[in-house]
Image (tube, rainbow, N blue to C red; front, side, top):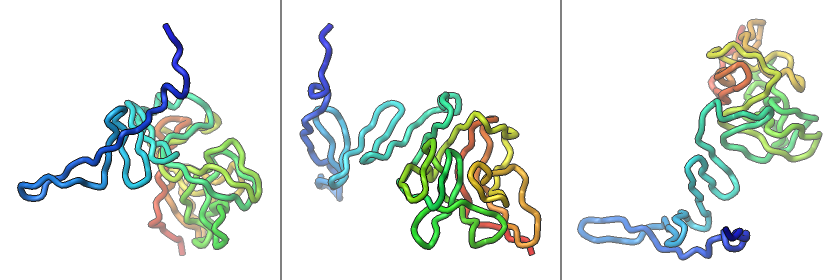
Length: 199
């Protein structure tokens, strides 16, 4: 069997607009499909679709199961690039500081407890850019969650210590649900921006 080269696998797209209907008239839409491979395009962005993956630009969305996340320190979901304000490790959760960079969440105060991203790289150094998960699933084999339990922002706020399954309860502490434990080592990351502050 002949091996296909990379160039042979890349489609030379032939885009045609998909048609919409207004009354009895067919009209072209701004959504295009390729006659050769079936990829979709909106404007200049190509959307690639396969059985378990949807790529929009270079941002993948994978469809699968918890059991499908088999490797330690992996994520499945939406990721974006941000710059860290401190050396960060996989699983650290951060908020967007006034500088536009990511700082560790700390549930001791409302100002530092709007967790919205999770470090998706093994490490991201101080003032370096890296991948951060904004919604999806993450696996870390050192986690030992109670399955089905909520996961909260912690009051520690240091690398490796931003998450807990015990809701903070001190004065001025903030309760922010970060996600749910799908297994002992898999977190469904879905940070809630409605928070409760103890008085």
